Image (cartoon, rainbow, N blue to C red; front, side, top):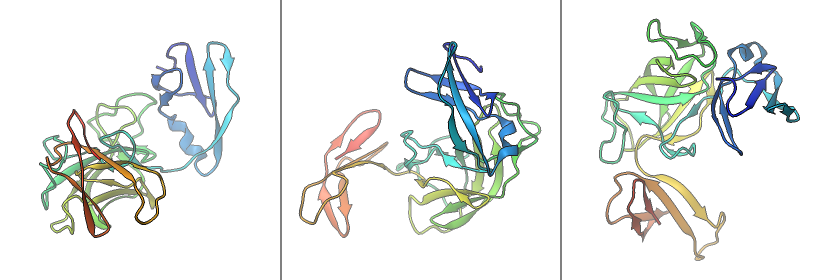
Length: 241
């Protein structure tokens, strides 16, 4: 819908499909017709009933890839799955040469295009017009498909074949769309959640918190070449501190 809870958002004067509305946050899908304004700017205006916010000016890009993550914070373990749909994790890591799926958004224009807020079709598939690459520890993976994820609105998908050799068990994964790089994520492994304080000196105290799934029962955090014992907290998402 383009209206939820008496809330509407106009992007470039066009009503945007809304995914979520709360008193402090709105999630939306940017209108397809903005592709004609790529390289320039447009406005975003929020309406609550008849009241309108001041218009905010935003830039419009042809591509702005962003990989979704397990923690929903844009960093750490990415929303990356095996061919059977199971999430890649520490206990079920990547296998050389397998086919994986990376879930993201922001690949830009699709062919054929998908209507604003409509689920993407499975036949024919809506492929990304941009040149899309998947890098695993800076090593290109063979991209088999890049475009809309069938049955979803605003969700994009890159299907690729893992290189036969990788230097690390949990490689860094980055998607490039027309040479624009996404956020850096990892294929499995824990996610660095927080470091306090933000800057520390040698021999001073710091608290490092990681979060993930299937973490070991006797974890340690390595800083440089030295390991420090850590405390594991159980839960749906485990924490190591």
